[in-house]
Structure formats: structure tokens, C-alpha cells
Length: 303
Image 1: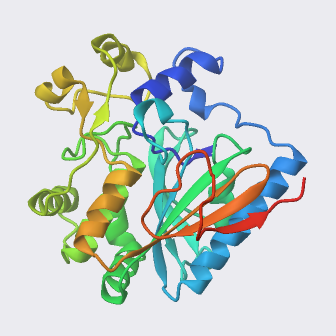
Image 2 (image 1 turned 90 degrees about the vertical axis):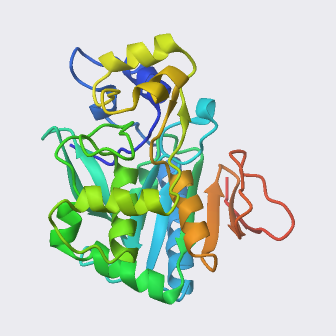
């Protein structure tokens, strides 16, 4: 079973582990996926079609694409998973290149997934959010080249996965951290496969990359997280653990860094519920409620 999983959420993982009937030693998020009704699937596919049209009309060949997957609202986070959409992806136009955790192999892998599949992977089919960030031409060309450079992409892939991986450590990695390190390798022109991850992290740190912080509500929860598969704290600085604030790469932290490094970058955010699809162009966030305001494009969904 393939699972694109990159949530930096300790509590969300604990909730999943305890609420979906996980058996000992098997993460609940590797269990059977949430079932969709025909109406749910039709709505999400229509949403994915609107997303793909936005990618096409962007006039670019690459985009940072983020999805709201797990419910991270208790952390004040909406988006959980980020990948790179490539117009010239060998897996199909605008397929998303991303890190996923292969449950059947117990290891991280790189995976190309079409826009429809990327949208369908959200945990709650009744509502969905996606964010698209389009880069200036030169920055985008560097990122696309790096993403399609298989030896480099694989050199940046860690052997061990942790959903809450420390952003400046090489022991583990989550999906968002792979994207951050790919960005660093592309823009820093770091094409050496030797020590690729450490070089990328040095470049990010030198340019003020600010991962997270992901706030953990209590010391008890921090301790309990050690017993959840694919969640680790042994790579984090002790002071961060004591402060209950982990430096973890999130879609929000990557978008914020990208916006600072490339001020001309453009953002389009889309959401859907059972009534409509909302498209907002600009950096003002839509919010979890998916309520349009003046200037948003609204596409009605038939009941």
C-alpha cells in the first residue's frame, strides 16, 4: 500500500493511532483508506479538474502544491503535505512528485501522482483545500530541473521516515522536508550527491529558513508520541522538546520561505465543500471554512 504522508502533527498521529483500530505495531494510517461515496468521488474529481486548469493557465512548468490531508486544526495548521507539480513529469502532465511512506515496504519512496489522485488522498472527502505557488521563470526552471534529476532527488531521500522529523537533522525525513531540501539544492545549485541533505540544510539555515514550530500541547503528549510508529523525538534538540515546540517542515513554513526568497511568486488557493468550489488568487488565506469573499471565483456544485 502506498501512502503519501507528511503531516508534522504529533497529536494528529496519536488521534489516528487510537481511533482507527490500529493493531500493535501497525500504524493506523497504513490501514484501509477512508471510503468515498460516488457523490464524494465525483465532487473531488471536479475539484481536481479545476486545480489542473489553474496549473495549465499559470503559464509555468512547475508549481509547489500543498494539500490539506490530516486534520491539524488543533495545531492551527491547515495544510499537511507538499509536493512538486511538473508539467513535463514523465508520469503525466502536472503529476506531483513527492515523498510518500510505503507502508508495505516500511520505508520512504518518491512517487509521481496525478492531480486527481493527489486530491483524492485527502482524509475528508466532504471538504478539501489545495494551495498552488507559481515561481518566477528562473527560479521555477531551477526547481523543475532539480525535481527531474533522478540521482539528485534520490540523494536527498532519507532511509528512515519520521512524520515529525527535525528539519535540520539527517537521521529522519518527512515529505515536506524532502521538498525543502530539493528547493535548497535547486536554488543553491548544490548538485553534489555526497552529503546532499546536509548541504541543503546548511543552505536553508543560512538563508533564514524557519521550520514550524509545531507546538505540542503537553509534556505527557510529547512522551506518549514516542510509542506511536513513525513519530520520533530523538533527533530534536533537547531545548525544543522541553519547550514543546518542534522545528518541523510544514507546507506553511516552506511557502513562507519561498515567498521571502522569491517575492514575485504567485499563489492560488482552492477549496471545496458540498456546495461550491472557491478559487482565491493571492496570498490572503482562504481559511478552513471555505467561505468566499469579494473577488473570489465561486463554482457551484450541483447537489
